[in-house]
Image (cartoon, rainbow, N blue to C red; front, side, top):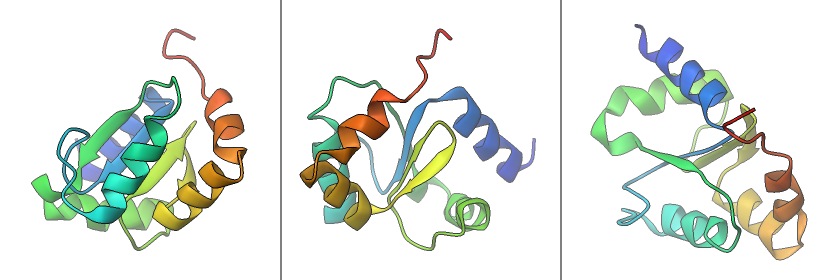
Length: 107
């Protein structure tokens, strides 16, 4: 399976997915840490993918999303944004609405 295809499958299979540097338990940059902290404020399941495990993930992901930076948050296969956008949505109350629209993995 090609890496782009693998990423597209992950996006389809996971209603909320965060591509980040590091892991949920050990973010490897401040931006990834900030998004994890914001997401943890909500009762939502989300998958994380550590882009540091394979440098090609970043390249393929950016080709799919047309977004150059990490982290990248996706809800229902759609890019929500990176750290700045996610934190802005969190601060103005919109992130809760975005996350509430996430399909449950049982649907």
